[in-house]
Image (tube, rainbow, N blue to C red; front, side, top):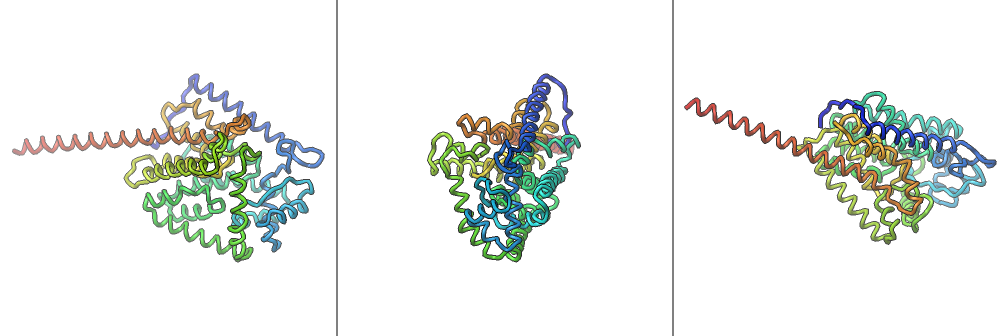
Length: 418
């Protein structure tokens, strides 16, 4: 894979792709408008909740922890009662679904009123994502497009943390070769949503990057200690005893549930066609092992695959590997699409355009009774993987040809000497 960017050329494919992208972005911006159209209770007409939606968990939960009531985070009924007292008595049920370390990130935001805090969170995490993708060396317009992609629009609708976790994952993978200590710090911070970093240890072990591995381990320990000192060391046992089983029960609930509309996992795809929980777990395990196996090959030190391609493919495979992922976690997919559009000669632009818009579209697919949103990242991973394999074959052929040429020259020189 060359480091040079391929020029974007015209053609009917680009026209079709532009139409698809424009229509999708119009749909996404319309959703944003409806998010902030409020009913008589102050709830969004789009979400039927406060327009900050999931951000209310980060803001209110962190405020509870700061006020010495961290135990409420791990008791669903206490937490919901505290949320309603804080925000609205009509607030639908919500849960704190994070490790207690997430409250460290939310603590500064909890010092602000919720609307300014939401703005700081939204634009601050998008800025983090923009900085994380700068090492890709893309044109400025493409970097901006990647930082405000459809997945980012979905992320803002939910008030979620996908821009931050995407920045930590992509930034770490891009830094791991030249700045392994920094990469390890980013990976350690990613433990606020550990299921998204499921492939990180695999790539570090496969590449024998012990400095990054050690840095990640130290950062993880420091984050756990800081959380304990800030909110109490009993928060970790409470998280393991209460929140982890709660989230497992939510994941294993009968299909469909409202929150399945934006799910992007093999586990949910299997559940959508009537598979039992055990069969769905088996399917997810097979997908995770397949992703991990490819990552092992991808990150071997001898692998000639271009480094940016390796990092973005791994970040996209992470979506496939986790059993608990949603459309707002699909930011790596959109970043990968942006990268491919300007670096691959003659890219399949219509295919990539549909993948670019997939975070906006999967709930439409799922509302028809099929939970196959995970096929979007799977298809991109397959395409990128095939391209990587072709690049390796080309590199091996070129190496073999060079060796044959050198051998022939050596024989000629030896013959002349005789």
